Image (cartoon, rainbow over all chains, first blue to last red; front, side, top):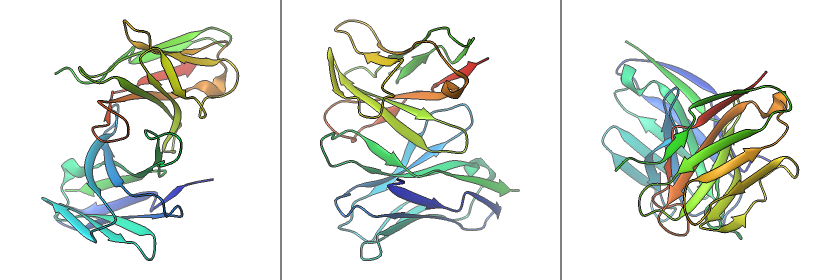
Amino acid sequence: QQQVKQSPQSLIVQKGGISIINCAYENTAFDYFPWYQQFPGKGPALLIAIRPDVSEKKEGRFTISFNKSAKQFSLHIMDSQPGDSATYFCAAPDRGSTLGRLYFGRGTQLTVWP
Amino acid sequence: NAGVMQNPRHLVRRRGQEARLRCSPMKGHSHVYWYRQLPEEGLKFMVYLQKENIIDESGMPKERFSAEFPKEGPSILRIQQVVRGDSAAYFCASSPEFGFYGYTFGSGTRLTVV
């Protein structure tokens, strides 16, 4: 069972455009929603994260929008650059018996054309 | 700060051999998590360890896989009698305390079973 569902699987955007990646979840106990960025041959690195008590968080060109009622959250990359080409994962933590486990989406491979 | 160190970066094993993957957490981090990433999929939780303790191994296959985090030295993920289906990228993350805050991933070990 996929705890966090992510779409699209791949995304191609022109340089300067907006990249949008969406995630949906079922477990209302989730209370922290990080996004990770992964370059080929590297481990995932935390990009930005949000808590459900706010609807939006912005850091530079990266924005998370959160819709608690719809149980959805999305990553927006403004003014996308070729250097943003990577795989992006949304995630949510297991608040059950294990406090450290993260559930990941399947990932979105973003390609930004110059 | 060297970050989370994993070695080897690449490991090739023949079917039936043993694979040992090592992970040294960030300085000051006493919590270690192992994840497996199959092609086209997100990361799947395997096990959560603290020094000399396995906290949660519910994501580990029941047979052939084991993990440890001794008092001294790195955490080890051990796969006995490897099969082709074990081919994947294995990532280790560490954190300074309970939970996912400050979660930092290593660059992973790419295991190929031939």
